Amino acid sequence: MLNITVIAAQAEANTQVIEDFSERLSLFGEVTLLGMGTVFIVLAILWGLIALIGFFFDLHNKKVAAKNSAAKEKEASAAAKVVPATPVAEQTPAQQDNNGALVAAITAAIAAYIDADETLQEEYSGGFRVVSFRRAGK
Image (cartoon, rainbow, N blue to C red):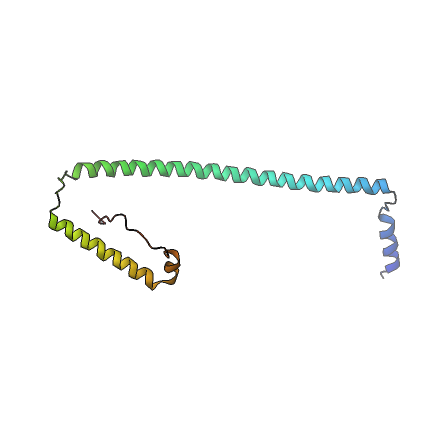
């Protein structure tokens, strides 16, 4: 049968009793230095792993960028060969009037859109200025 008092007496005999303050202080120092050392070693390992992963990603990105630039150069050279130079036609006064009407219509549409949205009204409360329009796709 198990006797609890015998087990407790054996456990008490096996444990070291640290009574002296200097012994407690040295044990505290050892535990603190061991814990801090462990933390810094783990941090150094993590830093090394992150640097290594970053190095591999940089290599991969450089390879992809080189591949993309080569493909873009091929496309640009092919496009330069295919597209013939076309002269720019001068606009007649009637076309210039149409452009003025187009600018006015687009400006009115933008103003109506801003008036319909409260957040845009706050952003453009001082008004806006149309600088230029360019036709998309040409």
